[in-house]
Length: 385
Image (cartoon, rainbow, N blue to C red; front, top):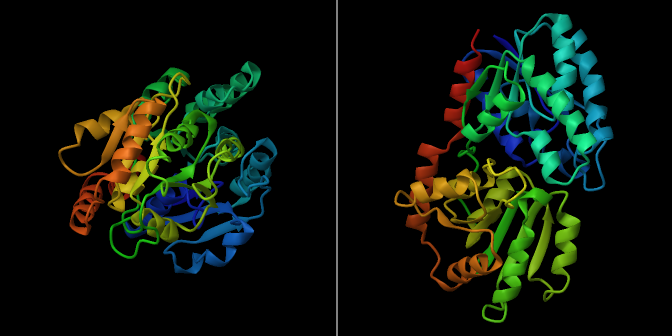
């Protein structure tokens, strides 16, 4: 097969999509398929870290508008990728299949161009963008437009690739005519594993990846404020980016200097080093947003590094941690309440850290159970022509 993966985000930018699509591209190449990636130039700070020549597939990168934080987020930013992409798909080399990563605007334009080329495409539903828009308080008109574009992109796809059962149910509700395949989700365990150094030490918790309003990461700052009198050396590091960062920075301003740190995105290998050295990582899902079906992929990366997670909120992640608690040291899952999160932080920061052997066991469990290699194999099987 000749396969082209289309995405507005890719390595070296650290994101769930980058890891997932990078592993997928490598798996296609290993399986003997001709695969290429159409994506964007990385942020200026990361351009020296993009080692495209070392990949077993070609990567074509194009300029794109970014917001003030350096992220491709916002309608103009999306369109700066999507409109030129329409012509690159329409006039580019013949493919047997396109695999399209959201946002829905990208799926919209690829459906149009692919139809003119008479080429099928698969839509990778790692998220439900219209639900996410609703959960952040977007106007009903905006939600309707996003949902219409999402339905259009999903309905025209030969397959919709879903990351979990909750997303599958939502896709079938939004686009009943679509063919949905639940392929699961995971982490690149070649990068996120327990081998190698850990850059942090002591009473440090890391919130890795994107922090958006619907995730409600502010609860960790509020919980930290409660326990600082007892554990004054406790610290939270927000590592990544997100639309909620300004609100989080404002909320943390009243805490002692250095107790909450904001670190912009770093390459995946460096993120793994930081996560390996943390006492715990943090993940959350604010209840009542209509987004309770989401499963934060950052927890997979943490387990790959052998680091336990504090997860606050509803959804499948909490159920998953409870189900597999006896198999590995996965961490603490609790309700979305400040007191409950404070108790979890207090427990993690006052108990003895997991030793190297225990972290190695957790990492090995992650390699067996939540590796992206297995996810990629299911994708290739689903889209094989």
